Image 1 (cartoon, rainbow, N blue to C red):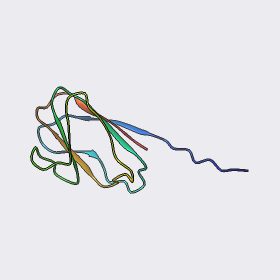
Image 2 (image 1 turned 45 degrees about the vertical axis):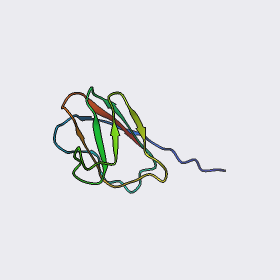
Image 3 (image 1 turned 90 degrees about the vertical axis):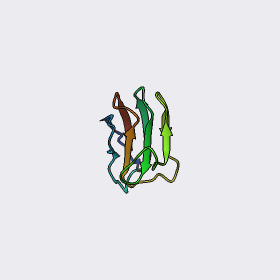
Length: 93
C-alpha cells in the first residue's frame, strides 16, 4: 500500500499598491510559488521585506507570469507597483 501526498494550492489576490506590500508571507513549508501580474504597471518583487523600485529581486511587466525557482524561497516576498492598478494573482503550494 502506497501513501500519496496531496498538495493543496492556496490562491490569493494582492491588490496593487504604490507602497510596499506583502505578496507572500513567510512559509518554510512552501514547495512552489507563482505570481501573475494582472496590472498595467510594472510589479517589482523582492525576496525579503520592503520592496522598492530600486530594491527588488525580479521585475514583472504587465501580464508577466513568474514561477519561483527550485528550491523555492520560503521567506517573505514583498512587492510594489510602478502605479497602483490591478493585482498580483498568487499561487502557493
